[in-house]
Image 1 (tube, rainbow, N blue to C red):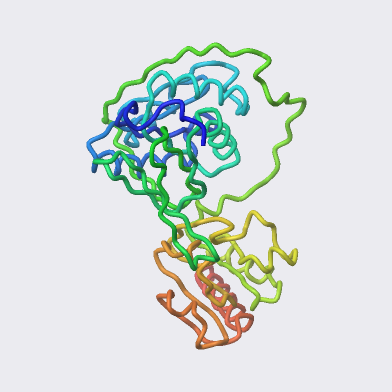
Image 2 (image 1 turned 30 degrees about the vertical axis):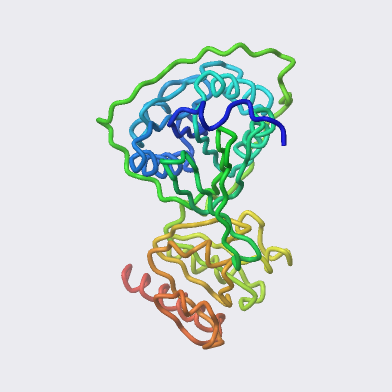
Amino acid sequence: MPEPVYGRDEARPEIWVYLERKNGQLEGISRELLAKGRELADQAGWCLAGLLPGQGRAPAEEAIAHGADRIYWLDHPWLDRFDAGLCTAAVEHVILEHRPCVLLCGATPDGRDLAGRLAVRLRTGLNADCTNLSLDAERGALISEVTGFGGGVIALLEIPEARPQISTVRPGVFRPGLPAEDRQGEVVRVYVELEESQRCVEVLEEHLGESVDLTQAEVLLCGGRGVEGDFGMLRELADLLGGEIGATRPPVDEGFIERERQVGQTGVVCRPKVAIACGISGAFHFIVGIQEAGTILAINSDPQAPIFEYADYGAVGDAHQIIRALIRELKQEREGAHA
């Protein structure tokens, strides 16, 4: 194992969060990591800092409102759009200057790309796709929880000596806190020198497609094998309830629904107010995707299905019949309201 660039004895008692932005605002994953980072920092008496690349100060103020004590603002026009080469060079520079103990990134395409590159350059460890984090302040050890074998194994991982300890966390795992607009913090403007040769990507043309963010859905209807690919039925009910539709892995693999709507350990982790599981047996690798829902309703023809162990309410019967009955009732109720 190569020697780390810096180790435990040289690291400052600080937790850093890599902040992702879009349209002048923090992405949801950044607010989630700031909430968890604030919790850990308060327990340990450490500083919580954010790393913000790109121009525009507004997200720095937003991050302070969400719990950061200090923001390192990497103010450079080339960092407005994520480029792995440029962003890695800039972040590596500021990390080597200040030597934090912990770096948290979202398990997003950008966060994963950056975290892996930094781990190699700084010769440190990386714990990926974590589902929980804790901090042993006395040892300065970040303890990262990851699941494996379909949720049958939970591993607690540590990086003994190398610093910073880097972990990526999947969106939706932690609940974002409410902003405190009167909260005070420090914004440190960092000027970095970047070279054209450090670019990894040249953008020739940009096309924005439609996508869905299930982590923002307040009502989520999820279908499994039991709906037999009839996601049109779920969509109709979701529209009546003002919700979105998701799925377990089998319908996604069979092509009945887009992969971005897969919920669970290998998909999206959601925190809706209401989650309705239709024709889903309830394997743990799906349950981790909805276990933080406010209320879980389950519909399954098998009264012994594991999903009922997690549900607040359950209906035993054919999912098609029950869902269509719900659709009829909701439509009749709306027609009566408009009569």
